[in-house]
Length: 132
Length: 132
DNA sequence: ACACTTGTTTAGAATCATTATAAACAGGAT
DNA sequence: ATCCTGTTTATAATGATTCTAAACAAGTGT
Ligand SMILES: [Mn+2]
Ligand SMILES: [Mn+2]
Ligand SMILES: [Zn+2]
Ligand SMILES: [Zn+2]
Image 1 (cartoon, rainbow over the protein chains, first blue to last red):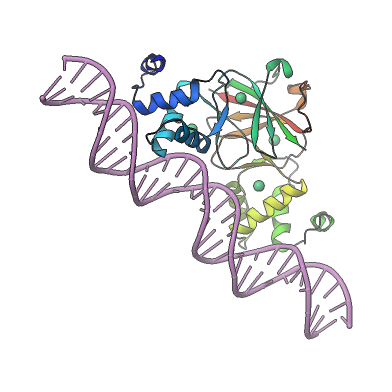
Image 2: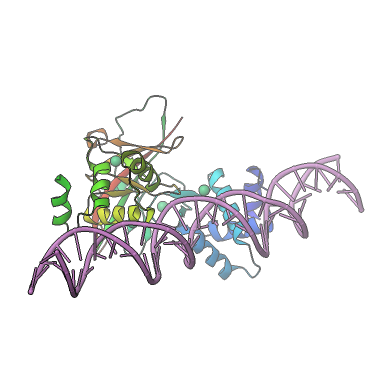
């Protein structure tokens, strides 16, 4: 399995549940955005055994900490995650609550001129809200 | 009172609670960021009567809908609001969970080149996450 | 001033995403 | 096989937010 090494190299045991969640999250060429609820449904559809909700939360947070997922900050009652962990920006369609990736070339480089003493920049993200 | 007209012109009755919340939110020259919890504390400190938590939620949402407040999208368990309703960007200090305004001149104009069919841009916000 | 309508406030309950608990389980090393 | 420790799981707890519906108050008209 291609995910076993990925997990081992991160210090995560390659359990059956984690491998199956890897399959759901990382086996497609296209990256995507999801909530825990979305992921729960995808898992239900793609595998026959059950993975507990607690494990889904645990795994997503473990993967996030290892840099295999990232959270996207939007105002929603549910947390959105992204399998695209490169630096990139988003459209957020307020009507259907869906995120759309923006290529960096669609926005251009962003130059933050101001500095805060003792702090360094971890990320720069643009969120473009869309309405009808 | 200076807030009575503001409220009446928005179709909101100038109740005692709303006027007091206006005082807390809009009487300082500096704008600021807050959570509902922050606001609850500020209210407790500045006035002697009690305003119920439900009213604080109701009022914040009413003011948001009228454009007197806006929500700032960040990944936090609590919703952040801003009394600065102009288009502007933010630093977000991950350590102490505080927002800092960025002047538009600190970021420069952002040109979104891509268009989505049938949708128009409502806002463009940059979030710069800070770590130590 | 009074009555009437409708918007607002309120305490408390409900909702619901997320996190904590702690017991059963499984990976991996020896 | 045994042991250790990380992981999974069902379930409970948490906590921010929203809902409910009854009491209340603002505004309007008389
Ligand atoms: Mn997380
Ligand atoms: Mn809201
Ligand atoms: Zn994305
Ligand atoms: Zn701000």
